[in-house]
Image: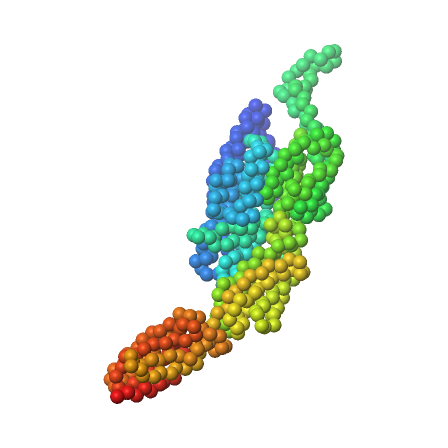
Length: 186
Length: 302
């Protein structure tokens, strides 16, 4: 049995209330986005060693690499946000350290900063030297990148980036020696 | 290039605007011309080479270049190519060119590594016993002149050379900048020169000291003297005939009746020597590592 539907009546909202509603909604969204940034946790790092060779990656080494890579990226973000090289001490060496130092120095000179938030890194070990003195990793990273000129945001993107990483064992940790972004892995 | 016009209106207020016009919907009208600048990335960018980002439009703007090792900011003129110098593009990786006029637009591009000009060559171990399987290994990592990992696959020749032997070659292709080899050590003690080279003009050399392996075929002789029984080995060599290093221990054991005594003696100039104080006939044997020597019977001497 068909029933006649009552005519749909749109509520009439005074324009002042409508503007206030929009303003409140905008404030709420702003607060939400701030809380998302505040809730931005440490980088998430996972490691697969299925493709590694010729040496097998020992379980302890796997744990160390994940721990140190995660720590390095958290500090790399901090360094590029704060334009200070202090957080990078000892985590990056060789070319990787030199490049990051140059990046921080040039950012500071120009009043620019960048932040990498919501980082997720999926590491694949693709080469582990026979004597265990170097490991090569493919990092498929996902993060939100924001570039700021002073306090003005000039660029934001959700990036999926790929890095070829060389890590070597140091005295008490694995350090990043090469961190090179590539369009794709071979 | 596209232009958009935004008109912002304030509250509706009836405004007297002359005869015939009772109400006008006019408040504050703001015209904003927001310019979308079209950017074109370099067709190809190689580390240490200049490149250019194309722009459309007109007027001045600010360029930001954000790269792996650089961040720069400078004024540019729209409608012209923005030149990026060789020095600004030395590091391989992803760059973002951001151009801000009334609004910001960006384009990203990759700078690829230049050709390899150096090899980092890790060789292990520094000392290797002769005639051991998979005893020597090497990892070669190719870099361009700006320390970028040279990612294009190139053939690497590994050459292992030891004096008085024909050199041995291994070929490998780099993968993500890395090539490696593993090899058995040679049969002769001495310096093993290991060379990694790319195309003949990029070459790095390392040296592995090949040392004698464990002793093999111990032979001893002994005779009674006034001070006791003097026993000594013939020159102690490994199974490949290389004299073992000085300091290699040889254990001499003397059995006489119910008594057994032993003494350790280091090899000195290929020979280990010891004096055993024993009366009566004894049987003397020697051992070093897993190698056992012959037995020597020495009479009582009375």
